[in-house]
Image (tube, rainbow, N blue to C red):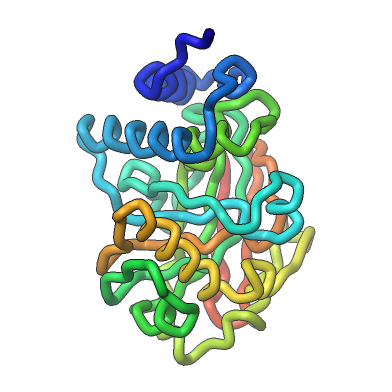
Length: 260
């Protein structure tokens, strides 16, 4: 019989993060770790961070592409927490020495103008609650070796959250066709991937609505002023020292991220 508990899982994941140490899947040993329990671990983990002085500034979605969902055996994205300790100012470098094996992915980010609470949120009502839309990068950094995890593991690990940056240019959602907003992902000046907003649940507002409804089922609202990262537009790119990653959007500007 497993002796894993929510507190023990939180202790282990925070220890790995602080020590820059990846480890085995918790689910391999904790056989009864299911999705609801994994979200309890995630919530307890972020409470520890808040108790240590961090502030919740938003939420993120993970596994927003249909292909990734099929591989993990789910039919909707994951949600996770963002805190102020994860914020990188625009133009800042990613401190690789603080991380384990970071990867970066471009995102469309929302800053909320109104509180949004499910159930029953649609893409239209979700988008109406948005104050501004921004280009974004998320730096993910799994606490599991080789980014190898089961669904419950990645949920417990706060969906590999680590760092993020959003561009200073913010546009009202009404001015954009987000499904057609193109992002060209570059590495050291060469385009390595490209996608449109449709890569995220068909439309980023659909992802936002799913987040609101998923959180609402747990009694949680997306608050006014919070940031929402809607999900990776392309596959995540491993980061190496001295590299510059760029994301050039049709209307949201160009965001650059370097690593040291």
